[in-house]
Amino acid sequence: IAISSNGTVFQTGLYDQMVMIGNDILENIATSAFVSAIDPSSPTPKWSKGIMGAAQIKAIAATDDAVFVAGKFADDIVIGSKTFTGTPFSHNLVNAFVAKYSLDGTLIAAESIMPHKVSAYADLTDEQYDSDLAVTPTAIADLNGKVYVSFNYLGGYNIGDLSVDGTLKNSFGYYDNVCVGIVAFAESDLKGASTVFDCRNAVAINTNGLGPQSICMATDGKEIFAGIFASGVNTLNINGTSKEVAFKTAAEEGDDTEYGAIMVCINEGKVVKIG
Figure 1 (cartoon, helix red, strand yellow):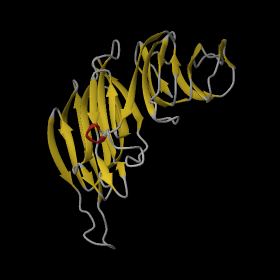
Figure 2: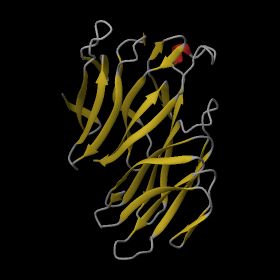
Figure 3: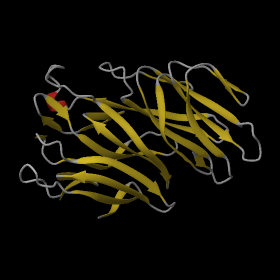
């Protein structure tokens, strides 16, 4: 859930048949997702909007004048007047979306985040490139004219003209390592996506699968804070430059592998602190 400054509560959920939520009738396609606005003084939701298609909302944030959601979807998805088509290689929830609604439920903007094979190995057959490509949002936040979305991804991802590759591991076939990132969108229309932060295994092709495991993100209204759980040697993309952060790895079987946290502080679309 999320709460706007005027006290409106926003909640999300799933539905797999036509439903009535408050005064709104929502049609479904497969197991669809919804977002509702609730005035705490009334038991009836003010409005509800469906995101039709196999979809899940994974993150939500509210401001003085808008509510933002981020989630994942499989095939075609319908968000208000927008339709996005999923990637052709999977019917699973591997694609991602971001949407902005006004406080009265009007869709203002929506964008997709689509996974792709790592470009350098795009010519591998599906048998050789045996991986589940995916983008999974973990959090969304709004600050100073920008909307930030954090996510885990396998392979690479495209957002409009922005294209980013992750890394692979080679273990009886090529598998994608988990990578994590934070992207900033323009708050007004969710355009102009840019990579603010990225973390992946430092080795382009490795056999150990070490690297980032997950990312979380929050804001205190003044800055954006993110935490990354990781192991091994990690390459951080910070404001267009690279930095390595290494944790101890097992020298031989039976040794312990060190896991640690990488902390990042962001403002005005840039990383301002790291620890």
